[in-house]
Image (cartoon, rainbow, N blue to C red; front, side, top):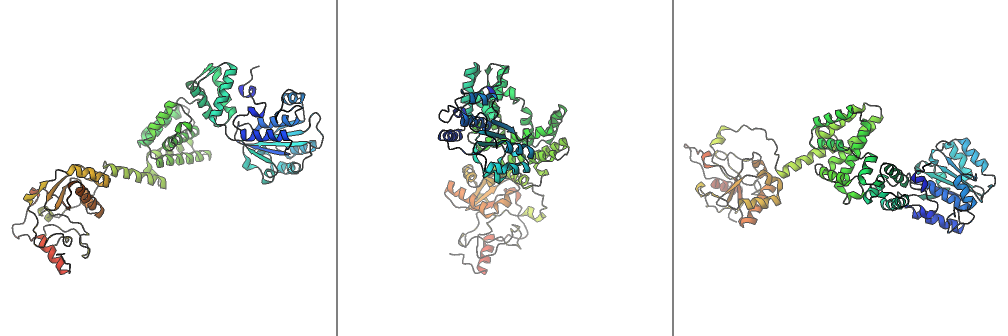
Length: 558
């Protein structure tokens, strides 16, 4: 009868155990020196060799001709233990024998001397399944067993064991088997069995096994029943990795904020009898893969996928921020928890996809952060501008003579005032900086305006200093009028941006780096927009500003 690979090639000596050298070396040394404990605890994930090491240890302590702490596997005792003919080595499954009576039977039997071996060995697998009463019944025997009794406890959930049990055992933690060690073992088996195993296929099987050698050999067994030449494509087909396109499609719909497409795809999956809970788990792992690709340098060492799928993950991850990926994982895990509570699975999955595709539907912190990040990206690229509410402008503003808008902080000693209507004689514009303009220097005439030819170079420099402002000033122009740099822009948000001190400072710094001249800033308006009043001659704004500064005691001649 055919024997599966993981049973046929189960290790018979400590040196055959893969990836647990830190344990097998210690156990073989204890057997060789005779310094054995009365109770051992083997803990670790599934398929890492706990039960295998327990059986090897049981043979080693009873072997008639041990070799360097390993059983010979040739004497009558070793062969009897392997065949189950010797009753002095007892293996118990605690999942089905977890009552007080079962442990009391062990306690009563342990008082008798072994019939064929030196030691009576009890291997209790899945020991965490014992009841509280069973643990209490085992406690005294485990603390002071007869000299001829050894206990070996094995578990995958050591945290469920009472502290009183842990303190009475010599504990060994089994690690997950590294993929390279698994590949080496599978290559040895392939050579012995006479089939071909590609390197990438072996590594893929090893990563799918998640550290369990038994799982890796079970997958390999499935593959060779299909074809004696095992390739990565064959492995993907056997384990069901093919056909993940719907996960990429759902993630694409979420990235594009296309909730309709996401729900339509979900409806097709539901009609095809796709389990919603399984879909939720698969989509969670999909976003986890995106997270790994986006954060880990060597993602191929962590991801369990083919090279083609890894390229797809890499391309799709560019459409998500890390915050969006983490938010998606949180939403999917919450959905999975709600499904287990008995809610309608389809409705729960639909609501989750809507929240993934429309962050504004969620009021949690992660959703708000994602919306803020989207706004920041839009402002930095200049592609999306805030929508400004139309403001009714007084009729007198249309006939105003355009005047430079000066920075509000130009005179430290003078309180900052609101921006005045430029041509209203009764209002006074903000004062210029002290000493910035000589007392008798008039404002340059409009006929002196000239285009600043170096404005494109100034914009390139501004892009490095202030990216959001650069986006606002796209397709703008600049003119020079005396020592003023007047900017013409069709963007309605430009006036509010340029009034900010840091923005004005960055524009002047960019202009200085390119032209080598220091300018004051203003807003340029075409000459045809100006309609000066014919009734009252306009006062010189500079004279008005200087008069106001002198009235406040500011020395403008310094």
